[in-house]
Image (cartoon, rainbow, N blue to C red):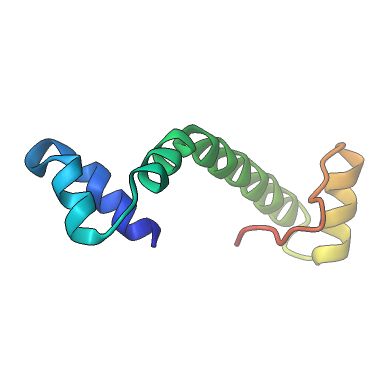
Length: 89
């Protein structure tokens, strides 16, 4: 569903938000809440990118020998936690 919201945001200058919301059947509160949360989504993505870069660096630094348990231990030693969530590829 966020594809609809992204489409509306990208084309807002061309067609107007109200018209597109009506045509795509998107409520005003849904669209405005989604748009207000954009900085948080960007910050989470940036944090995932940093974490992925650290994981790659640890893996390459071990000559591609470390698996998930050792990489996780290295990250924990650096003070990073995954909070039980899946790490990005």
